[in-house]
Image (tube, each protein chain N blue to C red):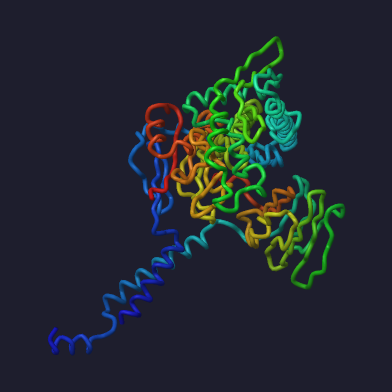
Length: 388
Length: 154
């Protein structure tokens, strides 16, 4: 009898597990006051953040022949971007022509941003900055100037936890060339290497920007790092906030064309949600970073906001049960190792949201709770932690 | 425990009626959750599929009429049988082979895109989703697919 009961209990437990109820629980931290759901049973709302943020009322489409149309732009900053708009197609030809004009302009904009910020394109502003000597003045374009200006503001605002100058760290850990990632713990960079490049990246606040007539310039910090007889000057990667910058520009273009309904998704990490033509709000779900089935652990209604997400399950490897992900803690010079598993920001600006999600991931739970309570006044924040 | 008590336990039934009822209720609840998840997704059976490369339609199949259209610059028909159609889509980015089951499903059977997300996506049987090969800029989209249903996962 006991055996039979045990078998039945095991079967039921198995079915419960398949239904999404795993034994391990994760903490969810948010400052959103209402309109959200913690969607998985193994995620529990945790105490810590003051519930201060609410979403405004959305707009819905009135009468008309509303239809959704979309276009994907491939290979922009190593990701794909998709724009979807819903418009009144009562006059189909006019609506179609308007969409074609809109997507042509959007493509031009994305191409221009990619050409400026790409670390792979030799002639991009970022590549020219990276290739310059320490202390050299480099002419950059207006896009790179604007993004660098925002990067420096966010570096200050996050007390250095957002820092685009961790380039060498990401390179040493194999995140620029996956074939060069360490395959054993012994192959990980040494403490001395990590510290040397961390120190170099800590000079990011010394970058100087200025304009002269119609031209834009950046002055590279004079700091260098010498390793094995070679001298390294600072390198930056603005890709982390470049997607958000692009999303903000596309959002402005949607406004210019009068598109009130639709969304723009850049690589599933930066997004603009206008209104959904039927539902008003978009139901935005943040993916469970500890499951491969794509289910959301948290859902929230969003309209007319930018949404950014960073998570440690996007590009990572595991050595001796330690997860090394592509997001770096600039203060330690090492990849974040899983205390905060995913962080999301909903606010007015995607470029700011991108920097904040990266910084929150790097801060770890305790510092992130303090940072959000003390410094965040306008954004909705959600992050989840492995509580151990 | 007295011998009398042991005799009582031994002569008792393996399951009390209460136990059986509790297990039955739990089992029914779990099965109901599964059925709800799998059968209330709001998707319809496939009526047709459209394959596009970089936004341009290169192949279409209508399951109701059995009609197909292909762009011979990119699409070559491979051997099939009475139930299936196999096509190979080749572009500058690489190739994907796609199998269309005339009964109403489609899947990518092979590709040289590296990660093979498109192959691992499995079979598309309704109009609730798409198969996407990002490295090859290839998308397999059902007729009637709602590109903006209001739900976004990121």
